[in-house]
Amino acid sequence: MRRFTTRQRLITMTALGATLLGGLTVLRLDAQTTDRRNPVRAAYMRAHFNQVLSMHDAVARGDLAEAKKQAAALATDGPNVPMPPGAEAFHGALTQAARDAANAATLADAAQATATMLGTCGQCHKANSVRATVPPGKDIVIGGLVGHMLLHQKGADDLLEGLVAPSETQWVEGVRIFASPKLEAEHVPGKIRKTMAHGETELAVLAGHAAQAHRTRDRTEIYGQVLTTCGTCHRGHSRFAGPDRR
Image 1 (spheres, rainbow, N blue to C red):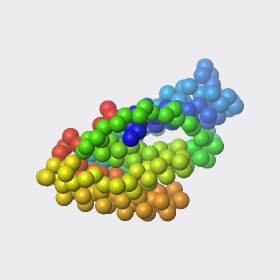
Image 2 (cartoon, one colour; image 1 turned 90 degrees about the vertical axis):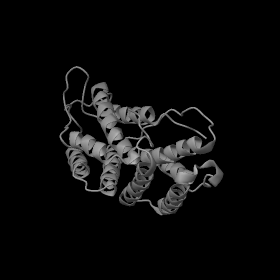
Image 3 (cartoon, rainbow, N blue to C red; image 1 turned 90 degrees about the horizontal axis):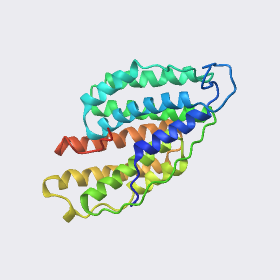
Image 4 (cartoon, rainbow, N blue to C red; image 1 turned 120 degrees about the vertical axis):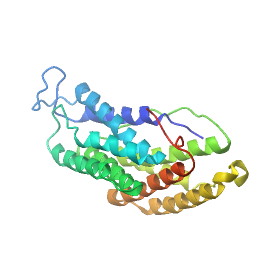
């Protein structure tokens, strides 16, 4: 199994994408320049995406209150560096998704708003002809329940990267992971065995839908359901379960 340090991977990806978006020099902050190397914007994008991942992970843990807190901060955050022409429309959509998450009444609502935000990031990258590549992570093999949960996290992160990059390869890899065989019951503690089996069945069904999804709209809807399934399962047996890359 490959375990990726996904926060580093995705922030690197976002930073690489940001440096390719035209419109800013390091010293002048001039929106009219054609310089396509942009470390200032890259730094902004890293910080912004850190916030998005914090919201995303809170939803995956089933922590609605924390997800809403992170979303509220995102809803009031605006770019402090010049952005490319046309970026305003995408920023408006991102802000609206953050507001929707901040006002979410249920975990499912917050998950869908989070997925919409991630899909909008990918649409912005695509519109600006950004295609970032990410260095591979290390191979780590861990068995049992912990290893299987890390595999789930990688599957979710592959789908996430598929939306944000956007990357067809990573989306397909995420589908493959969730369509893979379930963990044998004897490796699961009895008190969570039923919940685990239900969640794995749901994720396998969603993987089937994800394999047939090609439009961003459809993929964001499915990813929202994946996040909801993860968060519902995690909050059902432990407030410490799920990703926390802070």
